[in-house]
Amino acid sequence: MASRLHIPTAPYRPGEQPDFSTIKLPKAGELARPDELVAANECSELPFNLLRVLDDNHQATGPWDPQLPAAVLLDGLRYMLLTRLYDERMLRMQRQGKMSFYLKCTGEEAVSVAQCMAVNDGDMLFPTYRQQGLLITRGYPLLDMMCQCLSNAGDKLQGRQLPVMYSSDVHKFFSISGNLGTQFSQAVGWAMAAEYRKTNDIAVAWVGEGTSAEADFHYALTFSSVYRAPVILNVVNNQWAISTHQNVAGGDQNPFAARGIGYGIPGLRVDGNDFLATYAATRWAAQRARTGGGPTLIELYTYRAAPHSTSDDPAKYRPTDEWEHWPLGDPVERLKQHLVALDEWSETDHERMREELEDTVSTIWKEAVSLGTLNEGPHPPDAAMFEHVYKEMPSHLVEQRRQLEGRDERSN
Image 1 (cartoon, rainbow, N blue to C red):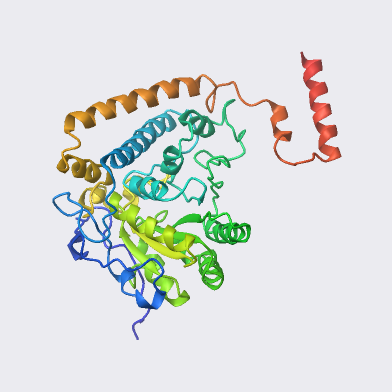
Image 2 (cartoon, one colour):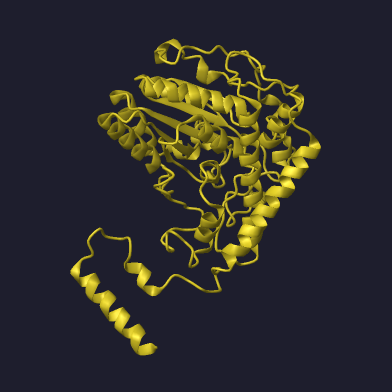
């Protein structure tokens, strides 16, 4: 008797021709925009659609159009382009042995940049991988980001995190964790605490679609729904986990956004390569959270163009040109073309911006490497291992530090 089990797999494997014609894209502007405080059971059709604002002619259309001023759109374009150029530089430097590890976010820049711009500065961000655009949008110094990747003398985290696992309390950027599902649960707890304190701040968290199969995902949805926590829970569906297709996590059954229905949480499925749609959905969810409506589950439908990390070779599990066939295009190019259509931008303007940002990244990189690289000093002093670990250092560590300092004095 043949097995009746469903064994999910990727639609295309290395050497095959990608064909995304099976993905049915609704027209931009067709999706209705309900009131932010709508009951979850009254908008259950939302996660089975796809929120799109930019049409094929690069025009914004429909009730979800956030009608952002051109200056704001230009800021978004600059942040996305800077994120991409930063990524390109850091990848090259990793390949040259200047650092041990890196993760690019090519093709996903609109997710972090648009969502960050749509929330308030006091809102806490609980990121997954490929969210460097959050820090860039919030003005975290590129020098500090580079030094953290290099684990050099300028590393604010003093070598305690893997490269790209940034952290900044000042910028409300929660430490990236290799155990990605925990970000969801921690965000819900932070949001509940913010509500107790009556700060009017919300939490925003991201995981990949692969992580939606982890238990933390379901814990977070349960607690956020029961307590109506002011939190936005984002699933970045970039089609691929480390080397497994989104179908392995159940993406071929129903949209990930639809998982909110069973918990009484509204779900939005959004064109994650459409800056305006991503901004609009996040703004809607933030307003809902801030006015007592509770959580929203957002699925950002996008594509991971780059390898999972510098340790990954995607040619072993997908066609090398699959990204070029992705029907939702490039988020940077789409926002650029929208600004051109508005007569607010040009190819000349864009090239000038690119050159300016490349110069900025190059200049800051030279300063970062002057503080050391993976194989070249200077590095943080040995005594740094005792700092920023305990609020009050235990006596045995005080003694160990004293011994270390005595050894260093003798060696000099």
